[in-house]
Image (cartoon, rainbow over all chains, first blue to last red; front, side, top):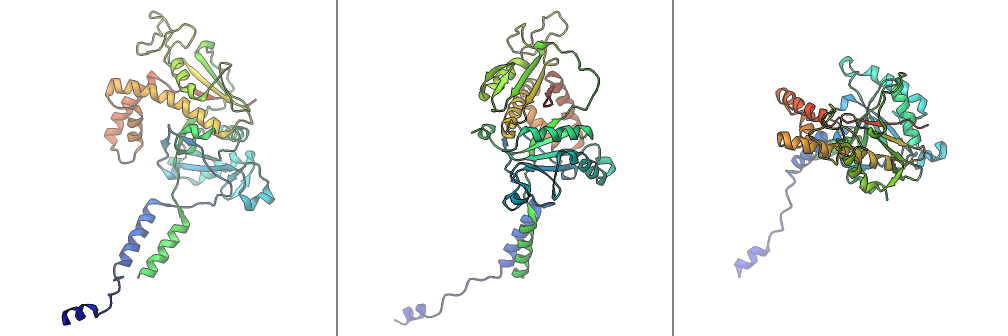
Length: 160
Length: 189
């Protein structure tokens, strides 16, 4: 009998947490390597369309981003619900795009100034009028390399 | 220890984002006041998207699912006569005299209306680029046994060595000369 009694005595030992910091550090390093710092908060709805014939934008330092879309809920009361252009942190009109590009270009290193790409992150529901205005402005400042940034997926999903 | 690591982890979760960094690359045409180069009508494929997101190719209403097929047929037509100097010996199209003469001379003009949705525009761009990629892949497989799109992504990748890049570039140039991407986005009037 004493054999059985022995087994029953003694509480279940607590799970050792000695390895917890290691696990958390592992997660931390994972996130540090795969993510990048947000440079600006997106104030517009930004659901990109899908495309399949895509190319990667490899070098982050050669990209200037322009967001287009309807303002998010909290900004709709002041800026309305029509699609707008967002440059850095503020809403802008198409005529300001040229100056913005020139300013951003001047910030970059000399050798990169001629190889910059403009990434257009445009919401699905925007229409082409606004995009066309932006393209005209880009042509005026000779920023001809454009990337229509999309999600990877079947393009036919866009039109349903 | 774990608390500090958690704190750091949460900080990074909040301040960073996983970027979407893929898309369709396009080169806009520079503002140019000189008169446009003369192109024969049969060498231009007019693709138009109207306010209702309907697609008109040379003024005929077509379905989006047929656009890639139509574009390939147009680019790959090679209608020039064998003795005209523009004969396309690698084309596999119908060689119809009423369609494009040579891939080098063919131009696709894409125009849209102000009210056209961006999603429809991207879908069409995707199909047109897809048509070029399909033709280039075919030529590349024939000449080098690899897909053009694979060569391109290898060329773009930062891990590829300089020697390899130069080699790839040479091959890509040859394919690009066979099917140059002459895709113009017209202004909205």
